Image: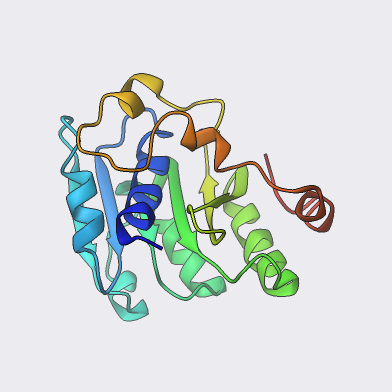
Length: 182
């Protein structure tokens, strides 16, 4: 997959879902592409970056972030800390195992479901997926179309790709029935 597609989908889907993202936390050992995408916004968005290490996440301030983009391996402790640093309208995007790894994904989605009203997988453009977990905003109903269409310099993401990324085949819908919260 072209790196720009991954970076655009990991950044613009959450930033065009949240009503007013001001504080973003990126948890990644290779965050440069994400930071480049965030810099395309005309809004005043503060972006903090920490390496993909659990010990660093423990030090992050409570309730500070509107959006967390994480490449950490997900377990209950990591997801609890991500929830802790999100504010009451916050949303997160996390990497996860392939949707064919049903048991691992159900576990992650159920943990996220304790913290978020909405938990949905979405396509990153190469048949791999990320999980969006939101306390307030729905990624297809609350997309900020004006923001999505006015970002300069995008090569893949747009306001048509955004909701289409959440379309899942029937076998996934059946397998994750009651686990995906939308």
